[in-house]
Length: 100
Picture 1 (cartoon, rainbow, N blue to C red):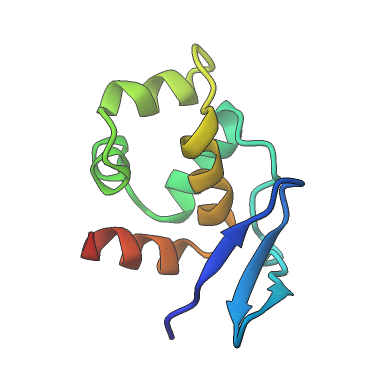
Picture 2: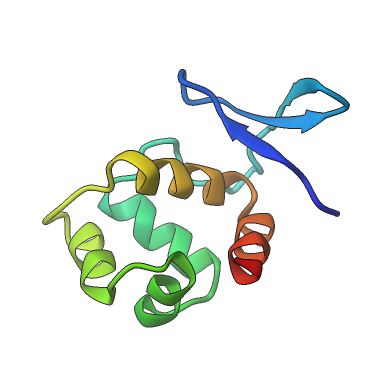
């Protein structure tokens, strides 16, 4: 299944179908919308990926993942949006990134 997702300015994620937007409900075990250090680690662990594998899939240096997980830095801008989408639809995101 190939879903088209959009992150809205208010933080909601919607699926685009037939020119309309439909809210995407987070899964029961989805990480909170906050993508702080704990949430990044949880996202990575739920995906069963090492820091190096997660960094490679996102296209960022492994040091970035380490800094996020240790709370030295916080994801901002596009990275924060990408992590929010991963929290709701990880398989879809990783599949799309693999094609890029």
